[in-house]
Image (cartoon, rainbow, N blue to C red):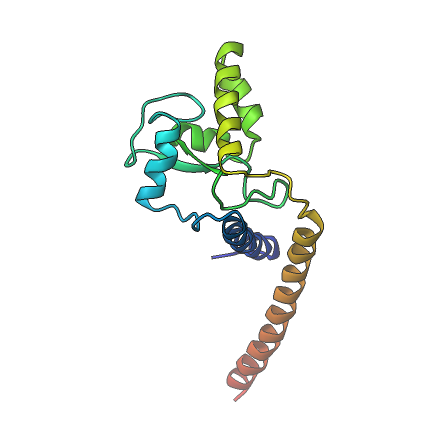
Length: 171
């Protein structure tokens, strides 16, 4: 349950990035990335049944799907093919909202980094995922609009609640 204006705006932004991701998948001739068990197997298979970050052996039941480009206001990653990668729970929680390259540098030797970076870039290329779709202005406007509309509605309903409480209290 959102607790603040920014929570409401962030939730709306994530829904927006999911919808744009669905459209982006359709535009590239791909089925919507949900990810289903079949889709999880496909991305896991690309990474040889390993976490794309630390290279730990994982399977469909133990993997999590991480967004290479985080789905947030700053990064604007889509919930779409090419942005969802298989990863172990530990890497998913440690990477959090970091850039994937930055996170890789913290856990890899230079040789490991080069190999894993190459594999991730090949994955992005396979699905023709473009990390910079220039959605910043649209996303920022949505974020501000949702916050303003939510606060207007909350203020309106608060005034109605005040009136009801005052009627009951002063009877």
